[in-house]
Image 1: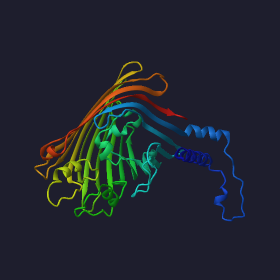
Image 2 (image 1 turned 90 degrees about the horizontal axis):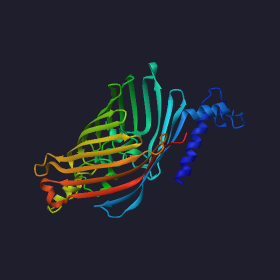
Image 3 (image 1 turned 60 degrees about the vertical axis):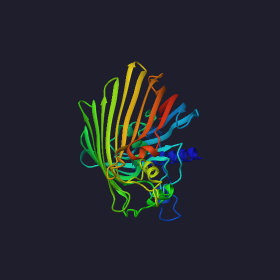
Image 4 (image 1 turned 180 degrees about the vertical axis):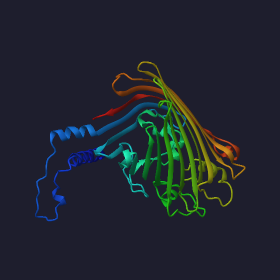
Length: 407
């Protein structure tokens, strides 16, 4: 049913767009002020439809693999890693839209933004001003965080850090205004919901005690970001600062610095991030500390406060012979609770790396056969080490990925 629903939406948008191409098209019957009026609606011409096909892109993103895990699970399976449909285009000059839907996610609405988690993008962009250097984007969109790991098309990003997988609110309802200073440099301001679920839903889902925390009256955040191209676009930057609030009187801060190197047959990115979270609502470090404190009298599990997260991630891709690629990625992440000396710095470490081969059998298509190995471990130190065993995952995967531009 979800596929049919999405197909219906796509057809509706295409039909609507075809009528919007010509300013001289008459109003439809729905625009009539009298129910007795029945104006003739002009049908789109063949040239209009051809022009429309040049202005709209329909993409299909797919990755599937046979996975053999060991550690958290020992059950091998054929997995649908990615399955997304994307529709983008310019309806009229200076006005564009983007819709992307995940086929393997729930369509139930979130409690705060009323948007389903299956929808990554549902937004419009309006370009305006002198030389159209300004733009305004409204609707569900990607967080403007300085992360090339997140910015990479998800079809090609096999495994993610906890920063992207758990800490970030990746796709959110927001209003963004941006300015293209030069062809190589742009700045953006993005006002967004801090989280897609409301305060009470987050606490109820975990059963944690509130410990005097109350929901913020304005659970909003602001991303300030810069994207740049240097050295003839060989060095690309994506830097951001974020300030947000989840609980009343508690403010979060985050800095993310993404750098990418783009050469003819070699690509690499290095992302660095540091975040101070007044309330650990992503719930990454809190479970370990709750396990440590559980034996203490009158203890109730809750979200940590004033926690620090840091992440460093490096990925490289190299086409060593035509159509054959070596790809590798490594990351190192820490969680610290400096206000408690017993728990202290780096009480949790998350370390991971993967390496693999890709083969591109059809030169004109973004299709690849791949095989890779992934290792991930979470380690605990200081006071929490005795109550939290280290966790390990080994994963070998073989599969196919395909980014299809349908039209």
